Length: 141
Image (cartoon, rainbow, N blue to C red; front, side, top):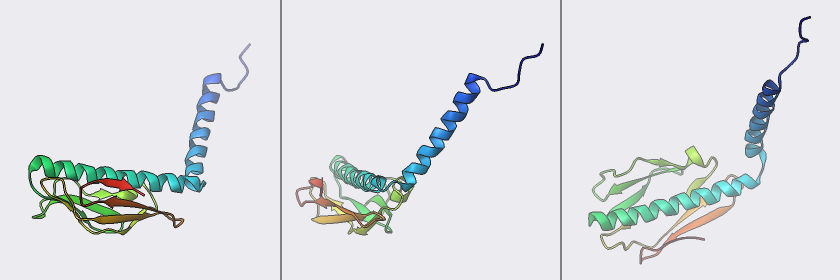
């Protein structure tokens, strides 16, 4: 007698896992709380990159700046325009987050900077400010 047709336990678990993963991906795009998480993540990324620029300026003993390229892109370069790091596009990791107020930030060889505030805005209108103080301190408001 031949066994009855049906699905094995392993096949059912694989199908349920795939459905759960697809549902989670759909939920991420529709749940409004994720917009705030994206905004906070983007602000932390910008602040981290600014601290990296400061450390590069000190270690290289020359001025290094973060230059604004568009409402989602910036690059780290020497003051003569030589790129030190690849261009950062916030849209790759933080969809819907834009830079609405960004002036180039330059750190000198002692880690001091020009006062600056970088404002990030998400698609629902919330904002976060990344503040650079003259002393080189970077903080998120």
